[in-house]
Image (cartoon, rainbow, N blue to C red; front, side, top):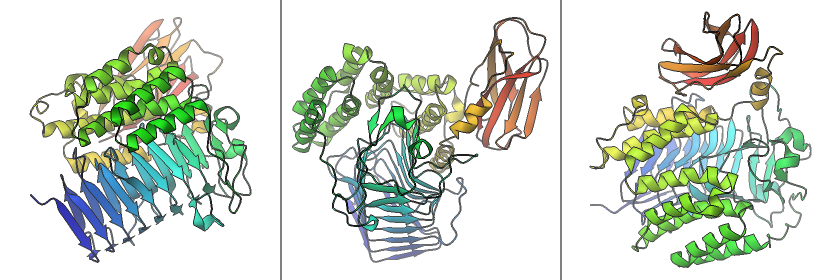
Length: 535
């Protein structure tokens, strides 16, 4: 079997696709990709494989913002070690689209790339890695960090002007978007600017959008970044900057940068990173557990929970014995974690990852389906649909998992290509404009109950909408709208007795997209929620 593929100084024109699959080292250097030509690399579960993609040019003159086109300049899936550097990308849907990668013992860096006129500059989904000194500008969205990714956004502390550091600028909708549990471990020396950004309307544009609610996560440190001359924290940072961000120290080139953190939690975390770099994985695991025990109310405890999983993956790459069963037991039964609201919620993701590593597929499927049926947020539902599809594709190649099927069979992909298109479409829906949602969710004075989230969501055909009534009412109805506010469907004559009620709604006639549904009681709007239709 060929163990390496090297492609240097080649041209790929008009829809040419360069594939690298399964256990190959890949080196792509000095190549030119034109007119929707692109690169696809997949290396599942080979911890020594490396992808080096350097000094290439990707130019797409037929660029489209249609998520269903799904033409990325490069797409990396489950690539353990990667270096993506000094590439120029112009056009495409995603400039760099990378998923579930970076869990090997080699490099995991995206550095010194220029990305413009794409839908999303960098789409970073469930990865480990460093995003450093790139120029990402003129795209629809700048950088998206998604689904428990562990990353750093780093610039050049010695930069003399914005061109010498990481520049994320003038993207149409949000320079940096991060899902709830994906906020970067390090966020320093970046120039993040958009002097004409607007946080109103249907497509709010923030410099930094952290998709969480005030009070559900701890305040994060974003000292030593440059936010532009017109920086106004309440309009540029989401959510509430006074409660969720430390940003008082501003750094703009050529100003000298600040000193690194020196808290006890930081020092202990840094000690664990050095032990990982030295491949002393057992000691590193003990250090991370000690950090969690001593400093559970710090962000470093959250980083440590993620890194404990990485340590077990790295043991596999070093041909030593990993123990995901013991790690899962620690996650489930450690009293410090289980007594801490934030840690207890985030660790459920990693408990499920351990189930997958242990081939407990029934449990893993049930976990994703429970989220789809009763999501705490839209991002949770979207990620569960994507990850469940990934799991089914993985199980196809696994004797133990090939016949395991859950209850929501609509999440089983028809093909890998269809799954990726659906994944890109769902990710393109994030984030929703929270201000518009807050306006829609203003309850009337006729409040006599509450509207429940539809299930499943996203849905393909039939979904169930539930609602709770505190008392008997005269009439109840549900109205479905599209994103413009146009009424799509009215459901009248619903049960109007006190207690929990529900109705099944057929959505087969609706095109894929995002919709809103409202509950009306006695002619007054009570509440509004969002639903997603995918076909």
